[in-house]
Image 1 (tube, rainbow, N blue to C red):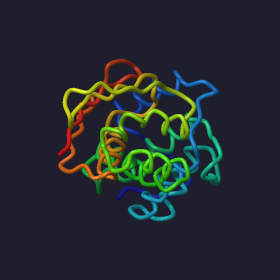
Image 2: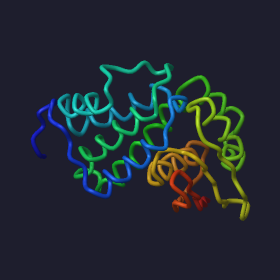
Image 3: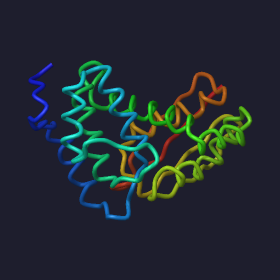
Length: 206
């Protein structure tokens, strides 16, 4: 791993730096996310990169710590997540693999919360019901975006996200983990960007 001076600045690959800048430019002060997502990402970074890597992510986000159920600017989460993906990428199959890992971790953390446990209870181990209710879970966790699902079969559908700040690999991880949490097997999720902050996710399971 490269120099891990906690006060040094991460230099992202040009395409990732452009992507981050574009997303930051579209955010407003009203766009927030729960602290538990920040802490989940930091937990994964600590395992793979140690405390120095965590400190670099905190520096990038401009915060010293996060409280799970407080709301923080999504701009801070974007900076933290892109830095974390850069740090973890070499051990997780690249930048996108690290972002997907953060999506999986975010889901685990959210489903352990009171809102997440309610969502699991309503789903009753039914992936289709879980995905149908997932928009309410997002509303409990972030202040921005619109989500909907269109079914293409009993165990397949297209999940649409509009004005969501995270990249498709992140939500591929989220959706896979959500379906697996309610018993779905052999889950497949493929995201495709359809606009600056919009994407569609084809998903299926057994």
